[in-house]
Length: 184
Image 1 (cartoon, rainbow, N blue to C red):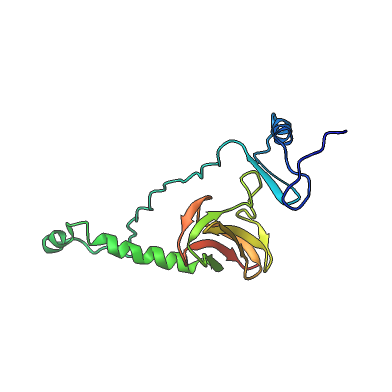
Image 2: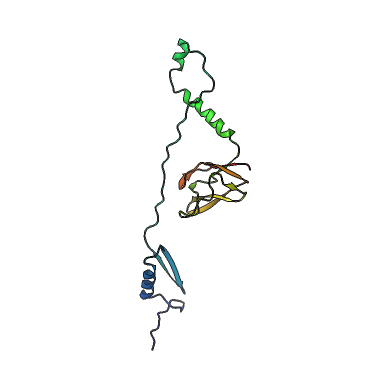
């Protein structure tokens, strides 16, 4: 009589230790990290190695640079004493920088949710877009991962990617600028 394979709960062929051993051996020397194999009501899941660790980059915030709006009048003794502290100049510098950003032509694409920004569908894939890329309405620009769900962020109009504000694999907040598109 031939060797009969064990049966699973529904009468189908069950996995044996030899079956699982052969599956593991077949993965040796390959790049396969995970395998799911089902037979009847039974399922074997094999995972090798550790999950990749996400890389985070720490970026220092930009330092405001004072901008001279008009040439100052010749200093007097009283005005020199009044302008000696440098602290009041910093709030004035922020307004021109904001005005310059608003003067740039185009449309901003912002993050619709809090999550992690990814420029490509996988680490081995090229980015969805680069600076200078022409995009159409509905074209995927990036992915924002939130709670293990990959949310594709699409362009809401036609244009050319003028700026990418966020580094790959970094956290983003709701409403944070991701891209600036210039009209074609």
